[in-house]
Length: 112
Image (cartoon, rainbow, N blue to C red; front, side):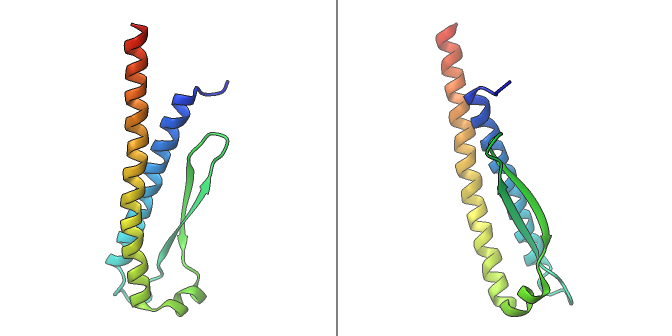
């Protein structure tokens, strides 16, 4: 049985918020451990879930070849940028959830 459109909007927004939080957590982990000897950065892989809406998130380790190319400052800049982007993605998905909540409240007021 397909979900109503409002449920898909809610599920998509919540999924996006969780994905943004995982990205933020991963970036913070990378920054906190940047000075640790032999530290291997974590990377986030996001995959769209077109059937149910939303995003699937997987966290893995950066390949050693990629780690050797970047350097500490480049990695730090990438993680700081990822944190800002994650905060913006979280806020955008939060607005989706809030809008869906207002629309549902309006619909219930109309039907009551």
